[in-house]
Length: 150
Image 1 (cartoon, one colour):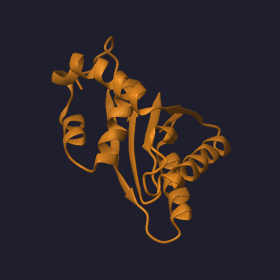
Image 2 (cartoon, one colour):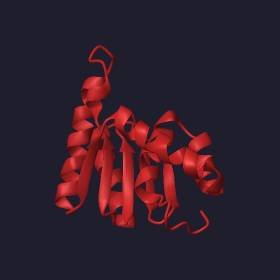
Image 3 (spheres, helix red, strand yellow):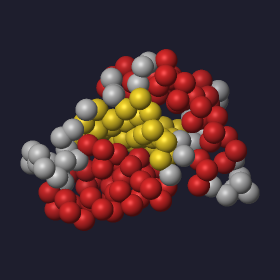
Image 4 (tube, helix red, strand yellow):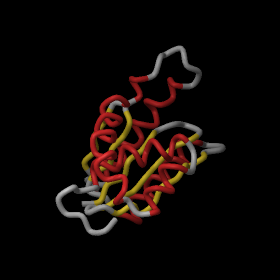
């Protein structure tokens, strides 16, 4: 199973792509400039075309305080991602910060010594958005029962 995890944002969008069992295929941050929604559509569609995921996990925006500047644009980005999933026949799941953080913490401390360098680098380097996407992804693609050396 292949999964894309997304930390949505209009200017900075964190993403991570992984595959069962235990593979991190790509992670990073997409920075949108002009015509941000169109750029995000093109970027997400390119990830879908490249990796053909079975599921997309999206951090839900409702964790944010409405007084935080520009957080009102996050629902637009989530809507775009959901629309792309639907039009491509891909399942999607919304997850709250506390929910994915708890899943990550449960699994990470059991397997952190067995993660290969790609996981360790992705969790230590890059933007906060890309690290969040990697943390969201990890519980979906890492199996404690079928460990393949990384």
